[in-house]
Amino acid sequence: MNIVTPRVFIAATRQNDGKTTTSLGLLSALLSQFPRVGYIKPVGQRFVEIAEQKIDEDTVLMDAIYKLNCPLVDMSPIAVEPDFTRKYLAETNNDALVRRIQKSFDRVAWEKDFVLCEGSGHAGVGAVFDLSNAQVAKVLGAKVVIVTRGGIGKPVDEVALNQALFEKHGVEVIGVIVNKVLPDKLEYIAEFTRKGLKRKGLELLGVLPLRPILVKPTLASIRDELAAEVLCPRKRLTNLVEDIVVGAMGASNMAKHFRRGTLVITPGDREDIVLAAAAASQANPSEALSGLVLTDNFRPSPATLDVIRKLDFPVLLAEADSYEVASKVHDIIVKTRPDDAEKIAVIRDLIAQHVDVAKLVGAL
Image 1 (spheres, rainbow, N blue to C red):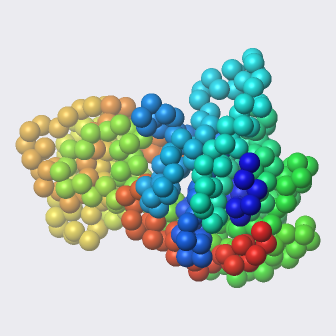
Image 2: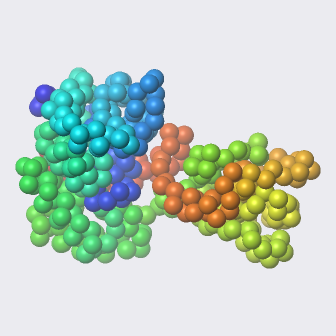
Image 3: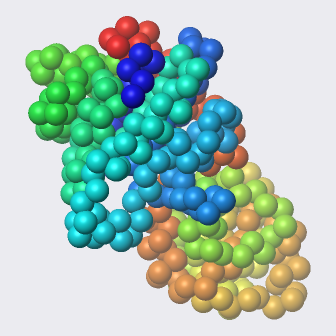
């Protein structure tokens, strides 16, 4: 396997700590230093099917943004399907999986000046089939950067736990990036987290301030999560949702909830609420809703549909009831999409401004 091309492995202390966001921004920063940068996510758990191949969705994202000039199947060599673990435990084939990762890395690294490797969560994820992040980093001969969430005590505790497993497998952790820190606590968190990490022999490479655009779902992601139909042709599906209100009261009492950033969820036969929301939007466009989800698959009357089609915010029609829709929206995992131009620009700026990429590269 290629042992010459510089590489770094991005891990995290927990799911949804910002590993993919960090990887996306780092790719941009690395491309400013290296003419040709490769990317690989050796073990992926959320995938889409492309040309009959199961490809990790983060790989699809990176390739769509950066045009990495490498087959998707090599950037995403192992997709953990629902029965993957059962099959592995029934008939262990670790050597074959390791060879697949190594061969894919060789193809990804071909004629590249640097390769960014993205893990799948904390150090132990994948241990059940002998491909934990620590084991994969060892296979790739990569040093590790750990991404964790804002705070002082808990992040350092969790980093130390992950560091122990990486070191058990002979993998060096070269630094830590702390994500999702309240902007007014940035310097405070940086000062004390740096001290805490230093006691563990670790470098603080950066502290990223929380940006609402990166943690709030868009109407597009809600549409996909609900498999909903878009009833309004003016598809402002990039609208962010900052608050959720279930319309289970009269239209007059709902009026106080018609404000910017709010998603209203209500049964499709509550046309009084739909019409009240439309009237409020026309009266005060700057405070228009982020969107409206009509539930129970109740399609409004033709007259109400005519009103909906003229709205400036999206209206979705979902099959599930209001409770299920609200639960799904509340639990949605916010992911960056290739068409999220504003979000991608924010991510690039965050890494460029708040992460010491030169120190990261120098530690390799």
